[in-house]
Image 1 (cartoon, one colour):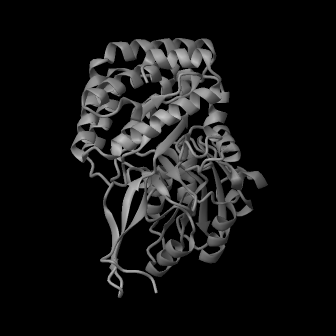
Image 2 (cartoon, helix red, strand yellow):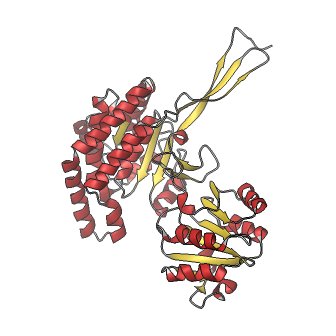
Image 3 (cartoon, one colour):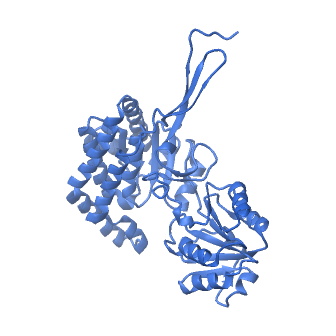
Length: 428
């Protein structure tokens, strides 16, 4: 659908009609995409990356409009930083699209194969999910990242960005569509919802049978709304309440280094540690607590944690279930591994939890018994990222128990089907 036709549709049709029309166009494009060879999909993304670079003046001018509106509307400094583009950031977005083009195509991969006694050959083969809806907020890079990941994995995508980045998203999408079409792939495989009417999000969430999966990217209120209202399967995480447990056998220097990095490297990401559990027998507790406080982190602890340093404030009941996304950390002293495991089971959001220990048996118990999407031994929770896992760009982190868990990249955007080959067998 051309930009002019889309704009006309958004001006004259209801949000429900807009979403239905876009979804049907996207589904048709996905079927076309499924017939294309891998080389064409990769070429389409390389062309899209080139189109982003060529459109730098238009994209930065559009972003300047969004920044000016954001400043006038009182967006916070952090929100403006997430929104802002400059030549280096835009080059990074184009580079990321190009990197996705170079990743192996998961579609068609054989997961497993069996030969039945009756002569039937069975294979489970990766296939695209179909049409994926992405609902996201202020980061315009998501427009390009999501488009690249979906197209590379054979999916069509329907993008609905936040109003604060509307001009940036439109300029980025226009460049992507030009590049994709120039390489011989269907431009409708990557569509941007043309209206900022909030009812359009509701229409996407209700579009069962048209949209195959919804992925929300944004703050807690957005994700909670999507999870509560969707009649389409949702791939997401709500909170990143990540724990680090300093076991009695942890090396004190390693424990201090990991704790500082897990909390203070970047406090506003979903993989940031929000609760530190310290074993009562761990010998370096005072040094770790002092280092965190001296780094500018506010600590809220139980009675025994407060006894380690007078600067530690009292934790409330709610602190153990709070994702701060700030330089604030809750701290509890636990009596052994069992108590640490019980605390994590009661308060973790199943995102990322870590143990620091030199005891191999304790590490294995932690890996096996903590039921989170990502479980770590002797490493910072800040590694909870698709790029750090070698997956390239990610569509998000999933904490559910169905389909995909942890960083969701190309493989997580596929499902599978059974292929059965026979030689005339009939069932007795």
